[in-house]
Picture 1 (spheres, rainbow, N blue to C red):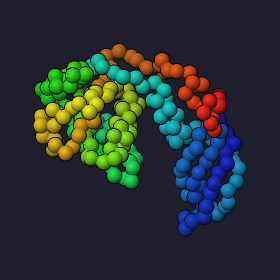
Picture 2: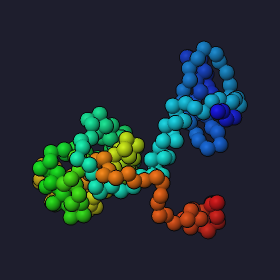
Picture 3: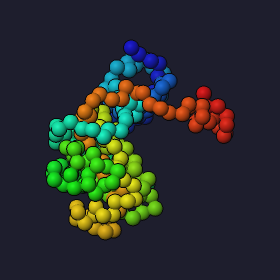
Picture 4: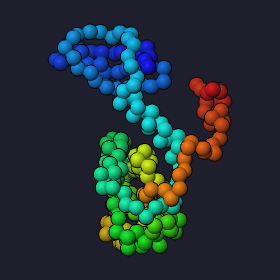
Length: 223
């Protein structure tokens, strides 16, 4: 399968580098190095590439992700744990401040303790893993760390692992339990694990897009 794309290119010491490809639905940023020099042109390229599949998988994760509060008694493999944490680490932040700290907890007794202390997250106790998301004081901290949290949740979901956001501005009593300095505020605790039952499939209760999306001006239909 192929689509007609507009390819934007520039010359470099390596020859031509394709730096942007646009077609009807996606914008891709990637580089292809080869020995011929060239200019921007219209071309037909195959879309069955790893890049395309990856972009489609990201949207699929957003489309299907749901809160998970019941977990199988099954550990999350360490490579996936590292990938989840790295997803938070790589998230963009205002002025590149990176005001986050992630405490990874898989000790069963500590998970039980966190489940007791977090009033809205008793189910943390049955999860095989939790990540405590702390933040340094910054005007942008809540926004930045929230973005990192969503990155971790979506990365986990893409691997078949569910999660949910526990707590918000009410977790100060957790600091001494995990040895977290007072100046670090805990924004959330994220339990992670394989869901007890299959969920998702894109079935969500959402307002109609026409109710919340506008084009150019308020109340002008987006679609």
